[in-house]
Image 1 (cartoon, rainbow, N blue to C red):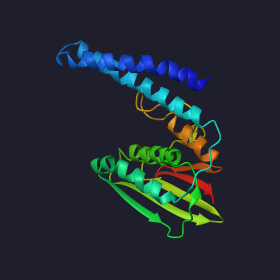
Image 2: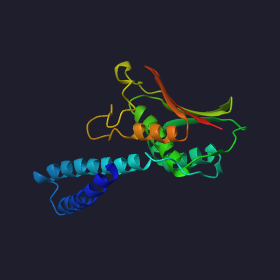
Image 3: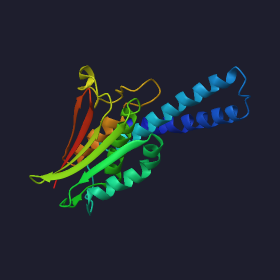
Image 4: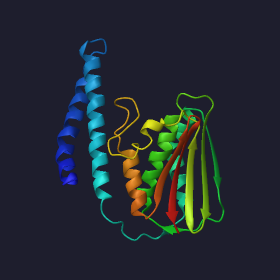
Length: 214
């Protein structure tokens, strides 16, 4: 049902977005209507993002098909390449500590890539207001479980909301900056792989830990 509703909303929302883009293109930037149109565009874009995330959330309600063995490092490296522009632009010091003895595991590659896009992307957002900015990624394998830690030196997550961050549509980001589905979807994907997604946060930053069975 979720997927059906999302699909029905997707086409008209995409149409509205295109019409607003057209109006912005042919509106004088000095016009009083220009900032209003820009606000409409931003809010419509957010609606489209929410619909896209709903579709993703719906797809991962079903069991994952068996996938060939994959080294988790290759997925992390691919995500880091995709996010390299943001990392460089924000002058973030990124360090990694990846174990050499990490076994390959069967997982849904594109889904797990989305998990790390969400987690590392959130870490980039978290360090916006600190200087210097630092993100550290560490992998290990203990007791037949692979652990991936993503640590940032941002301001951390307030204790009063730490229990809510994995709830659908909950976001601590400013209005218009997040859909509130990224962590919820990531948790669902990890759990579909029989793993865990955990968070530990202090005033000196946050650590998100992905644990996957071998």
